[in-house]
Image (tube, rainbow, N blue to C red):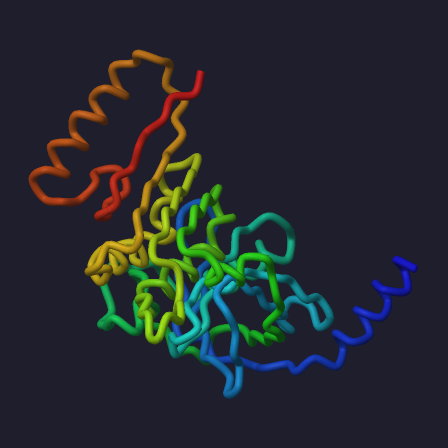
Length: 266
């Protein structure tokens, strides 16, 4: 019976709609993470928390790989963040590394379209072909059923939550006739091992901090450290963080408006 269910799902997946998308933006981050910003196909509707499948014919004509969607439903683009953990993802990152470089210049945006830092000045004709299919449901897509959210992401596992917190800010809860439009409060905790990983969603977090006028989202970054307990370097980081935060409102570790806690691992 399990094999029948699996085989049926595989056969049905063959007939799913496939979309060849244009690459609007590509950024390669430290920590071997590739962020892709793609055109949204006509009729492609999804909820935050869902995922899609990606194929790159230049790498393999039959391999599909799932990735959580990091853009919000009412953004006019699709985005995913790919961590290189195998041959296919490594090859994909290498293709885009050759076609674009990293930049910290910020693109224009507004409250309905929050974008990350970084963009490519390379003609998109030099990018490999990307084909997607989906979207597909996931448990996180039901977040609107709850008044208060506690979102905990570890490393690249935070990707579905990035879409959720963007969507909450884009659609602040409005009650009309007692109808609930979304969560009234969300607490987002993100734990990473490396300081470079804080770059992955730096622009998104800065945008949320800027546009979340009603303070619906509370964000916390936790950076694991290898320093021994009582190490003077940890105390120095904490002191510099506090001074920088008080003076400029920017965290010295993450270089964003979100304060990062450097934790101790023994």
